[in-house]
Structure formats: C-alpha cells, structure tokens
Image 1 (cartoon, rainbow, N blue to C red):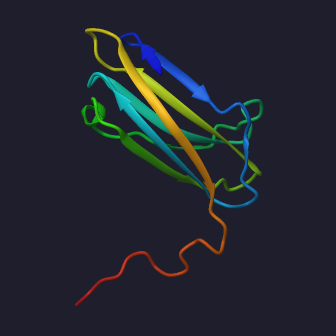
Image 2 (cartoon, rainbow, N blue to C red):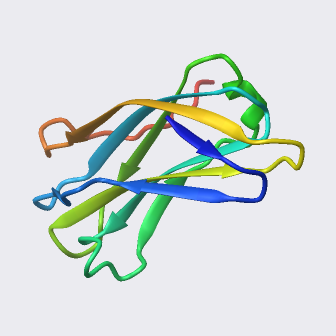
Length: 128
C-alpha cells in the first residue's frame, strides 16, 4: 500500500536486480487506487540501481480513473540492448489537488521470455 499526498510521488524498486540473461523480461503488476487522481507507472531500468544508465521502458495508463476501486493489470516487456540485469520500478503519483491517494500494489510477477517462447512469425496479418 502506498499513500501519496497531492503533488507528491513515491517510488518502489526491487531489492535485487533481475538477471535478464540476454532475454526479454515480462513484468506483470496488479494495482488498484481509491481515487481518480492516481498515476501509476510500471518501469524497468537497465542494470542495478547502483549502476543504471537511464535506459528504461515504462507502462503508464492514460486514464487513472480506470483504477478506482477496480484491480487492473499493467504489463511491460523490456529487452535491454546491453547488460545482463533489469530492475523493476513502480512509481505512484497523486495528480489531484484535493487530497491524498492510496494505491494498492499486488502481485508483481516477473518472467524471462526465452527464445523458444518468442513468437517466430509476424504479429500482424492482413486478410483480403
């Protein structure tokens, strides 16, 4: 649970970097908020917190209102171009000005996508 005052931001990150081992990493996070003024971002930083170089990927939903009293899932796939480690990060911001917002973060799941699991063909197909 993270409670943030109006105009404030809170960060949480994994205590240990994840070994990517040259594979894409899939992060899956369930989240719920008590007010529409919540902005939740799921991010992946290349490297460890002590040596990250600023390369990252994010998933930030366009409408925070979708999270009010409903559990939603954020999914992020990140493949660092170099390095062996990825650090998951969650950012919670209160975008409103009337009061604090509480966000419940649950079940951060992490998967390594091996070459055998990657889809070998094209993702888009047109039909006549």
